[in-house]
Length: 138
Image 1 (cartoon, rainbow, N blue to C red):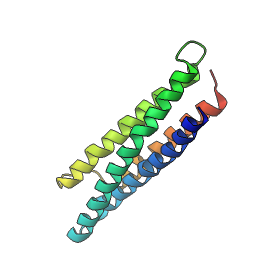
Image 2: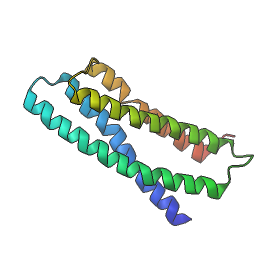
Image 3: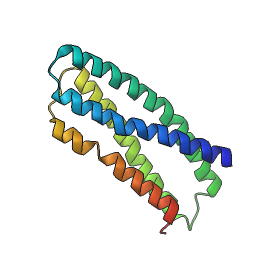
């Protein structure tokens, strides 16, 4: 079980690296006017999104394994709350894919400031998930 926990932590750290960096690329895409730079940023964003997705799947699988090992039953309110946070992070991840496709079509309507704010959401998700695991408030 410790190996599963180890892989889960490492995979989640790698996934979050992508969740933190991809919206930063979106900030640059929203500000950029040079077509060559936009093309380069889109290539970076596509590769990063693909990497994030490939890392997220085993991270979630390890998390599910750990959840089943702990037990889904009563007295584990903190883990249900953490699963809720994880679901929100998966939605965030998928929405990043939607935003990437919007940039690829040249249809972005949001400002770089909006993307800067959007970029802060995974920080809150990470804080919530870690606090729930460490503190186990309920």
